[in-house]
Length: 143
View 1 (cartoon, helix red, strand yellow):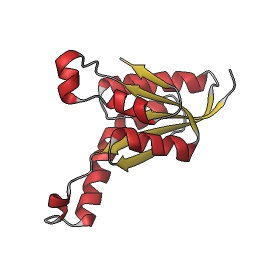
View 2 (cartoon, helix red, strand yellow):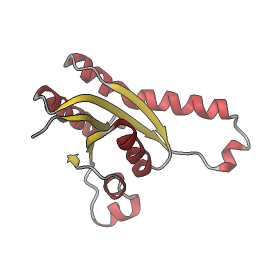
View 3 (tube, one colour):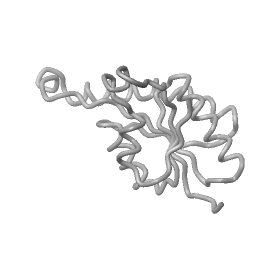
View 4 (cartoon, one colour):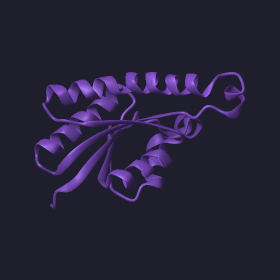
């Protein structure tokens, strides 16, 4: 298998997200990619909120929450002595992940899945399904 330029791990700070990070670290340790990137996607606030809250406050909130979600991934990569670049995006998960895949030249997306199925999966929606629908590279789901 040819070495890919980058692996992009979508992280949210959960245990399943940490398992996805560990898997990506294993792939890098095996020499399958040159770069590791962590991405947290924050939800976009609707226009109604921006009427009452300044752009600076919204941006600060996204940075704070994004950094919280990225903290465990950063710690895991430091413990493994594998450098990783971190990114915070704002918007719909699938679209933002796809944008970063293109921008970074990532050859693989890795993300944890909580495994919601049936009615719960339909009602809650699925980040994994959204990402798969938008990206044009392989996606590895970690449960």
